[in-house]
Length: 142
Image (cartoon, rainbow, N blue to C red):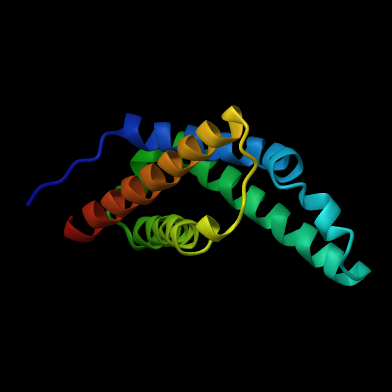
């Protein structure tokens, strides 16, 4: 079976990942009022929460940059391509699973932009999981 994921699809995924990294602070602040909640933690726990938030933002941005700059290298079948695409695919599959399993239990503000923004972000997360899973699959069958 021959599978050939086009570079443009990987680049679109990369642009979306950079978008999620750039929009992340807005979502934390405006949608979830995250900083108010974090202030209730002990100082060390505040810093840990902020650090993990930056890790997420940094990973999303880095994955996007890799996808935009070297899409052909992500699908060339090398061990490194397999490792990187597996990492990105598992990361986004985990995000989608977490989104489905835990986030419906929480109350998100009912404003129009937040409701439709949530749908849009979920579509992006599924897109990322599918694209990088397909690229991983392509790498494995080369």
